[in-house]
Length: 482
Image (cartoon, rainbow, N blue to C red; front, side, top):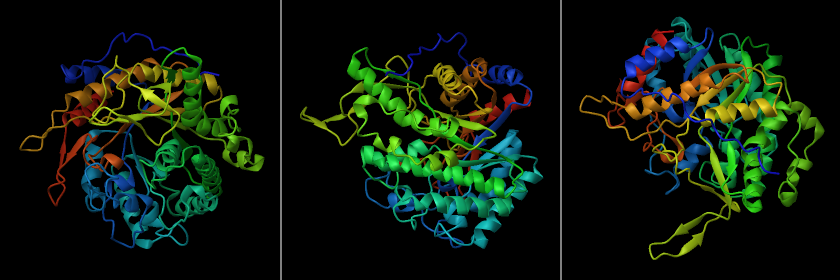
């Protein structure tokens, strides 16, 4: 019942990028295989701003951000990095960085304000300008149709099966508009995050706390993915088609049966629930102790599963770190020492005390990249080429008076994870890596408290001045040495 236990190999050659970043950049650049694609990413809601410009509609995140206490610093993304006005500066940064590809997302509500109907001409014009700028600089594009920014006008959101159909219609309209200029298409980014954080726990938009009753949103997102793949192929787009699922290596906190059982449940909810239907054509078998809670898996329409199980040109894997699971709900400790159970799953995550964490609390364990890739190869023997998305490089950045950021911790993080990915590529066809993120931006429920960009953005300045960090120069140096 428990996930296959895996322990990463001891790190044999962790990078020392912060101490000798130029040498390490050159060494890693020389190791990049021929044809290995290096990209940097952003997402529309997090960087675009211009929330009231050009007929853009509200997404669920616009509504969520207005509720007091939802966003750590009380901020919103109405301006953010103001990418809509500064896209030319941002494409110049991409050109100078030397990446192969820019992974961005279309703003669903900028193109289709109500989540249905004709595409908004102002939104079309903006993405025309962006794509033309990328083409002029020889930068490939990977476009995600929706990165968390569901239109607020779609009542019920992903709880409503009709949203999957709306997403398929939207995919077809966007494909007809841009299908001749996109090199790769991602239908959805991390549907597990939307289900678990947005509908089960409520820490992301739309802020529902449904726990197991959130599972229909997983099915509807996957159905939307399948319909979008069909729509893209019907529009005869020239680019490759895939999606990006998160994958978290899971282990139990102890060998006790209860901990092992909940570790298996966590693995199912965060990994198998979203990968199995796409890659195998069926949901994982419900775990016996949780058959009632997981009954949704047994009730899935076979026709839906056939739609979900579309042939893919690539498979995107978003990696943040491992999870250690123990039985028992999360509890909060009051100032007077009382323990108060939270509204949560009947399990919780234990810390990895043997590993450091990022500023956002993600486990900084590059050794587990090999575990994640090995698990995927074992579970899905017919994997298409895999692109690894490296998330979570948030650290306590300190800009000087000239906005320079000497982010040595991020350099180490990126270098060590890239090295781990290259060392672990044997079991699968690892075709590329995507680094998050090009720019400091609105980082969802963290607001602006967790900058993750290669480029510093001065949010106190109306012009949103951009200044490349040390990590930008590190990656630039590595790519120049391929």
